[in-house]
Image (cartoon, rainbow, N blue to C red; front, side, top):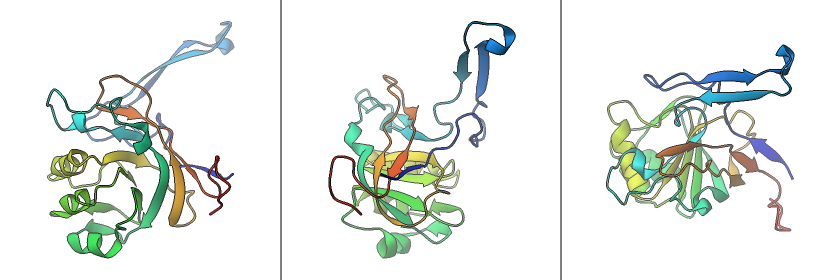
Length: 205
């Protein structure tokens, strides 16, 4: 079974402008004659590889938080999709986005972002999950609208991926459950792609 780690390191990941920088506090250190090592961390839940829940951009009382989301959204077959760098337009969605997939990870050799009504077009395809590299999938002036379109349609967002070790586009198996943090709008994720074999199946890709 070939496992591909597509997570970024929490302590060195790019931080969204205005969010706090992650800080590590060493409480106990064996190199300072303590009996064991013990550390604590302070970081925004949207730092590094993380999942966004609808409560990130909606404040209704019954809006789903990260622990309300079914784990099935983060585990299962996924399509890694190569896109041309630049804006994702309605034409891009029509030309590239598969209709039969349930989960997508977007990859490009340069920055990509939803433009115009493209996020609404993708929301209409009802994916369980969309993942991508970088700290945002839209320009600052349209970022909230893009999040609301996708999260409001039930598509969770897996942000801050590192796809540098993914050798090809195509079909994989994703394992990326968020850390259980009750009532929160986001949570850290250790995201992994399984390339060659589903662990409980004899089917090889």
